[in-house]
Image (cartoon, rainbow, N blue to C red):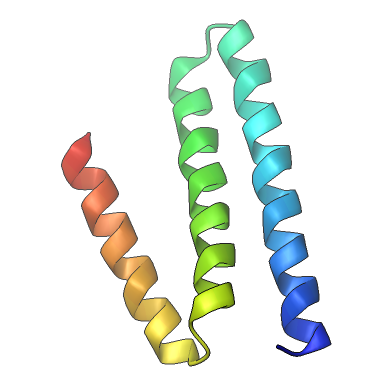
Length: 76
């Protein structure tokens, strides 16, 4: 795995954590729609980081992201 890919994975995980903390803050203020949005993106960034760990072709990552989004919206 290249150093650039490792840095991108770290960035995505950091972004996920920041977004999760935003969701907690918004939930404390009972801003449920905004908190839900932030939680979605927190999971999205985490899934993207995991895909980067396992998938090396950019096209496959985009395909898996589409699957994740479709699956997530079926649950809610």
